[in-house]
Length: 136
Picture 1 (cartoon, rainbow, N blue to C red):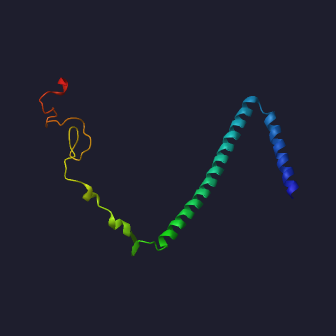
Picture 2 (picture 1 turned 180 degrees about the vertical axis):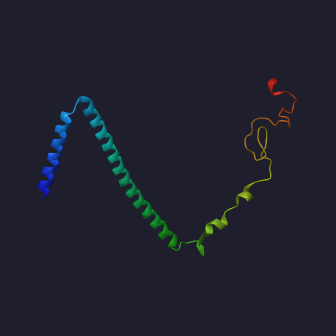
């Protein structure tokens, strides 16, 4: 059985080579380009399927690990229904407590202390000294 399949594959390859030799130069180039194109597409598809299977297995293993770690009772973690609350979060200062009352502004900064587009301007868009933009 195996030798018959091998013989059929060899016979098919020989017939394909004979047909290719019988073609003219232009048609042979077109056939070669078409076969190369389809060969590349088949190869890319096989690699894509292989990569997808490998990555989905890796993602499944990582998800299982995360679920296992979440189910394990941890030291310093309180469980409230579906919510895990690490006790270490209770000791941290809030961001609003860290912000002071000092003025973070200055030349070229807006009210939030972010860099602005230069010195403050009057409501009409002119600098406060009265000069126009063309005079600078």
